[in-house]
Length: 126
Image (tube, rainbow, N blue to C red):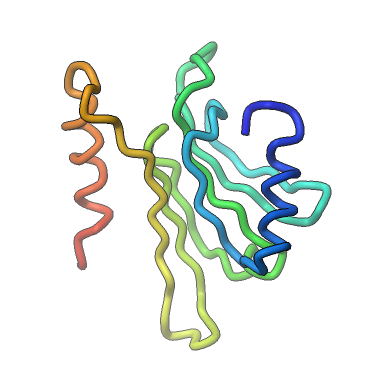
């Protein structure tokens, strides 16, 4: 998604397939934040946190304007992991989304271990 126009293309596909939320991997965006696209969709994203970092990895969640209104919390955990929580039509029920971009098996160093260490608490039911 780092290339110009990629987010707009993905947003069009989201409309075409009638999706209200879409998890994205390998976005190649750095830092973390939220962007509102000209088409109305919002994107929350998490990438490398260091200034001047390479445009590699990265995860995001794209959502419609209506779904954005239901977003109650989100956390950019790493360039491999982002979480978001939404209120559902039944206000007593929350939907939690975990979008991840797992390292490949040939990842160097402790990259794989750090990924699973950060994923594990997000998947525990507490």
